[in-house]
Length: 95
View: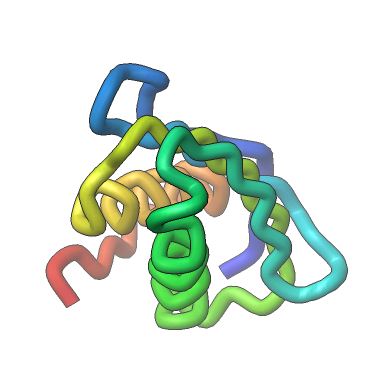
């Protein structure tokens, strides 16, 4: 699916992550700001990347501001932002 507009999901509350997606040109670009970057930054990037790869995304810019979100929350926010950005209702929840 094609990214039709910039979109985001999540909040800046504790234990959440705000994920914003925009059209990209150089693969999956992840810009992460996290309160737990030194401990879990690589894992957060891997979850974001895998979620988008599983959706078939090849070029996208991700801006993520994390406040200690769990893995399942990160994946849910990426999925929600993606479906908003593509204006799609063909959801693949739970895969």
